[in-house]
Length: 558
Image (cartoon, rainbow, N blue to C red; front, side):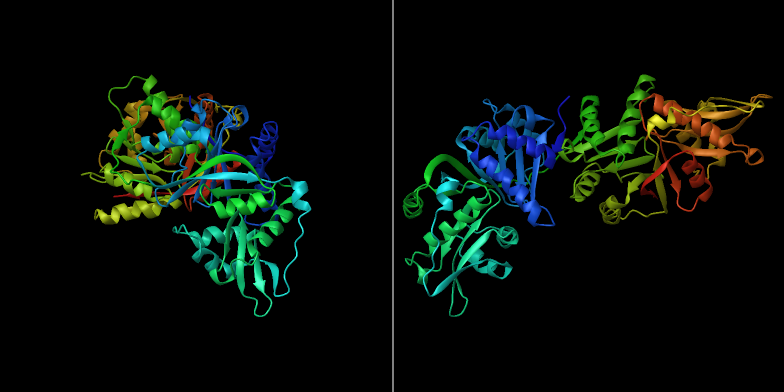
């Protein structure tokens, strides 16, 4: 099974820094990146804008990880010689954002072939690439830099009001440049030379997420006055005072900058590459997920329990139903190409009765696109969009509206879950007059007749559920009459709990629920249930049994 995509925690980033420190000086820029992240977290209440990503524990065993900065810059690195884990990381994560221009930043030459090969495989359009030389200077030398201004200027810290000017003179324009430079300024990563006469900003330098000096720029009328050298010294001294090694990247061929930094004592460190690209928008095709795919999908969702417990139980219940060797595929799973591998977007259809869809992506329109491509709403019978989470309702309603689907009902429910460990502790004690036994399809007509949400051929629907899943009933010992029942739908959860009116208030509902919960837990699944908002009786019963409310969902009938 492939390792899941993980966000590396700060505790683990400290471990990663220790790993990289053992490979100095080759990893000097990586250590700087990690140090800057920690420093920015201290200064900025909204975090450092950086997200560190790995597949499983590849960061620990192979030194392989990626960093995404503000949805613009992407940095990838590995200590692995053959770069196999780096290629897998690029292929199986959502690092490449089709909604934005992307920049691979500071890619070492030894990683370049892997990055280009992956971009080609992913049908990426490279719009620009250039090579830069990395230079460094020791902290000790930087601390000794004299920083002395001429009488007509002073050095100050940049603030947000300076960002438009800084951005306007940057030679490589891109969408979001203001926000990009703003994030550096936000973390006090910019210094400027200001005229004393009117406080005009005439020269500046920024320190980026690497702690690297970037965007050293002077307004044309004020060039050749030594302001650039002055700012480099001041910024290097500031970086060294924080315990970091000053670094600079210089585009190959920029002789003036190279002479400036060499003149200050900077030494060549390594070559790196910047690649600007856009994702080519291609028509996506619908894929039916097979069992191997579903195991991969499950491994993705396991990291999101209890939030997505119902997705895991849906997949588990699908595999359990296959063990029964029933005829036909009652449940089918659909996705678009390989998007599901990174964002978990899929759609499930149960016969022509129920549709369920879910995504882990922040771009909820993935659901809308999938519903359109699968023609999910092209049905000629009563259908239910089953248990749609509130955050997924907008794209669902958008698809319904676009296809002129008439909604008959929308039922808001509470989702409750119980850890399987607690369910396994349940004791089942029947009163003397009854016994608990499994349901079978012959009970479907009675169950359908008392179901508040019944419909034409509901008995057939329930029969299918019992064939692919399981249910329990409370039966009278005298005559084997079924008086209470509960069963599992395709979600593998608890559903359609009901008791014949004349046998209510005898604890039969609680009894049969405990029996089914225990059965579900024995199959390794966390019991779940949905309760219609306002059904206080059911909510009270499940709470007393230890169930916890995790979210709301809506059942849309059309």
